[in-house]
Amino acid sequence: MTSKIMFLGLGVVPQSLIDILLKEKVFDPDDMIVIDKNEKMLDFFRSRGGKEENIHRMIINHDNYQEIFHHLNRGDFLLDLANELDDFVLTEECTKRGIHFITTSDGWFPVNNQANLDYEEHLQETLKLARKNPKTPTTVLNFGVNSGVINVLTKKALCDIVEEDDTPFVAENREHLKKLIKEDQFAQLARELRVTYLIESDYDTTETNITEPAPNTVYSTWNAVDFYNEMDDRASMIVGTEVKLSEALRRMGADVDQIYGFDPDSRLLQLNFSGKFSKVKAVINDQIIEGCADDHEELHSMREYFSVWDEDGELEYAPSAMFVYLPCETAVKTVRTENVDHYHVIALDEIVSGGEAIGMLVEGKNFKSRYVGTEANLEDGCIGTPVAYLVAVSIFAALKYIFKHPNEGILYPEQLDTDEVISYIAPYLPVISGECRLLEPDKK
Image 1: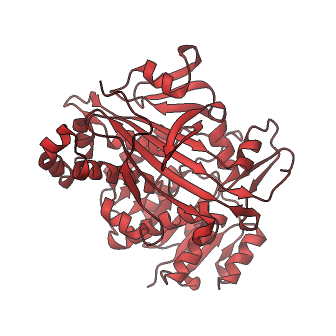
Image 2: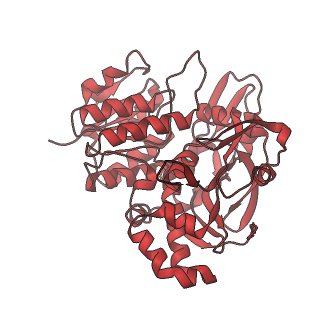
């Protein structure tokens, strides 16, 4: 029997993904199920051959989420691309029912209309669930472009350092370091390379024809609700074992008096002001940008993946990690709005040029800094908007991974094979990797 695929939400990302899936003949329109209440979105589905009986108009919440499983069977696929859904709850249910589940970000059912951004809590709960269910139908969590592809590219950066770096430590230990890669010991590899910082960057260069944004409205090129909540949350970073607090604060452009809190388990440092008011330097391709330091899902999963503990469970090594986001000009203008009444996703016909670049700068003591990343621009002939296209290609790669590895349980992006994932995205997106000296770290 042919597998079904259900889309929770039908915004710009799933629309781009549907066009990719139809182009590649991965799913037939008859096998696609959508849940949304926006008639404009549903008209898109109809225009692609979607069946009326496969349209379900509902807003999913804590009280009715079980209803979506009436339309799915074991071996089917569920994609969460909507707002305010609890991805741990859905992961648990999909695991129990044998359904493949893919998310592009983490989410929660709202409590008192407030967003919950405790990524660490969900990560630890999910890892426990994964350990209890090691060979169930594969679920891939937080696999958009960031989180998702950028996590995989970070592993590629380490592989490229081992293969190409000519510093004495790498040159003298190359065969040993290659063995760590072959044995999938990336945490030990990062430790021996003395990786200090993983500085992720997201630069949205979208230019629009919107001259006057509507009052009390937040604009975004991806998901305006999630964008606002993310930027409104406290400025944050992960402080690793190799970095002093004073150095971390310097990177964040803050001082001790601006610390809101530090969690020794997650190593999350939070400041007493919103991320949208922070200014932190990062690298995109061959330039330095100054963006906002926000908490992000991949900071937590990468810290977990690249950490080393002793036999007693005491943390011995973890890299520092930052997510630096510079939104497009229209989004920046509106995200600092005090009274928000409306949210607007910038549509394709409102985009004049530009796109989005995603990167990771890997810094450390025993190698030359390495930059790795990808990008999509309107001029490249994207399927949908550039931002949506980046995420859609990433989900497509996760789907292809699941087709080949159907029973690997619950996975985070770091756990997927680097070369395999890159082979899935390479026909659609460039993969950029090279030495970078724009932000020279302290080698002491």
